[in-house]
Length: 228
Image (cartoon, rainbow, N blue to C red):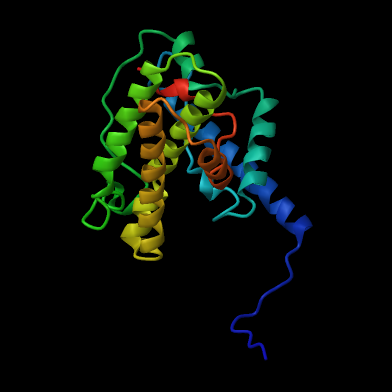
């Protein structure tokens, strides 16, 4: 037996697509209004930076990816605005004013309380430690191939997985906190095994193959990104 608590309608992709297009056009319209206002105060074309939390698109906002695609396509042919990276903008307009940004986040209160508090602060000494050790490995083994390279690449992968901001966030929320804590511990432990194996000039091939299948994110990772 099913009980409907609210009146719901069948999802209509065509209607949704029309709303997505409308929202994208409205977003661009308001960007242009902001640019027009900013032009009063600057001697160069203003730049608007739009950083987003990637999980918003598709996870919290089902149509978010379609909206972003529509915005990009619309701006690609727009005569008044152009898509540009921060690096390209700074290269085109040198001698810009430099400012120091205040620390802030998208978390509750605009600060770091969700990611650094009594429920999760214990993880950071371990994360900083393995990050330093990964830099050490990258410098100690500058040009490895074969099995050692696989081990070094996976060590880098485990560091990035341990650094994931979702783990402390989940611990703070209290929902599935033991799972998040276990994930951090597992990634740190896996990294340390590789570190110790490489320090002893040996690699546990069977274990490495198993853990590569278990934690297979970033298949093209290159451990040199940690080289100091």
